[in-house]
Length: 167
Image (cartoon, rainbow, N blue to C red; front, top):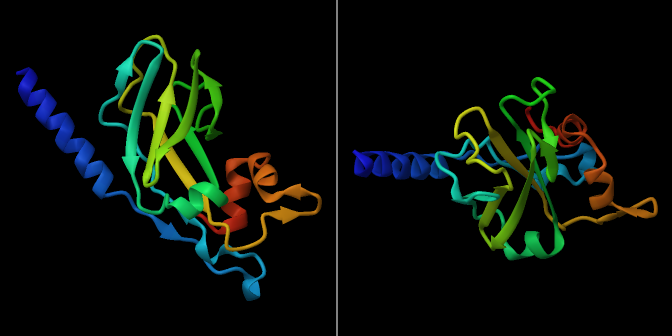
């Protein structure tokens, strides 16, 4: 029985990884916004969490997380958690919700890892994660602060509106 569950979980993880939908955002008006190369993932729901108490994670492979993007671009990540006190909330990562810290990291080029320090293993249903990639093919500086700082201070909906990303 455990072998069947393990095989099914592995199969679901592979399907989730290969069915991820990464699309380019629409071109900016006359190219001024630099939106043409903004990439966003579909919403991922983990089929399984790896790790142990206080150190949970699941990984997603994505070739858009290239060395250029990781080293010089901006990567934003978001979560929507089942049971969040703010219904339908989309939180930027890092975030504190449901008694745990939620975050992401890039352990290697082409790979993103979503993490949680929850005491018990997080649910595999109802929790969703997404990332947005802004490559460095346009100036990261704007009005004295970096574009990265500006984007991290924006809400999820503001980022979606700015880059034409479907919610």
